[in-house]
Length: 211
Ligand code: SF4
Image (cartoon, rainbow, N blue to C red; front, top):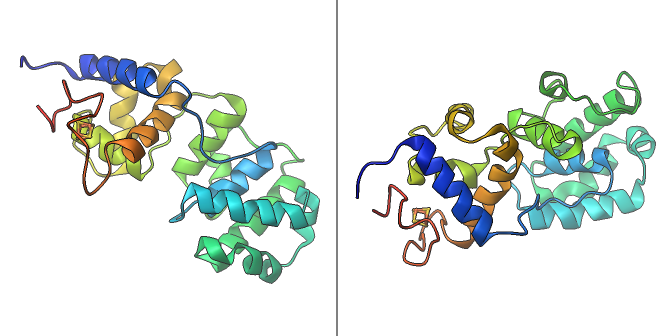
């Protein structure tokens, strides 16, 4: 096969993923913006399914940001324990609630740097928040996205910020939000960490690893 440019690779990847996963979307449930942010905090080293179950319990008891702000770190920690790292996550949730109900005046910032003032909200979650809530172009590089992009040949890096930079160079701005979700879909369905299903993968005619 003739060598293809990274721009062409990105174009082929985008088309194949859109065709394979037409209903792709964020896998964290949310009906209110603050819930997405809290689910993002809970998602560190935890599955989205577990986050959705446990956070539904949390929001069933504390049904507003004010109620979360008033709750004790210990009580929050007890509920979110199944998500792991519960002490630091409870601290992050409390810090987020205090800023949102205080300094931020109940409006989630559009600025990722401001969001990253919350311990537990790093670049990945900040990008998820601004992308989902405000539709501000941002790429969420999670473990699936990182793995998939390296295998396809879009990046050589294992560092999320470098993967994000390489993706920004070749995917169009209007694709940035969706490409994160699409990569997760591919990573779960075909390009799994241990046993990628290259034989049936929709990207196998151009993916660097399989050709
Ligand atoms: S062809 Fe294989 S390595 Fe490449 S994206 Fe598909 S599953 Fe992953």
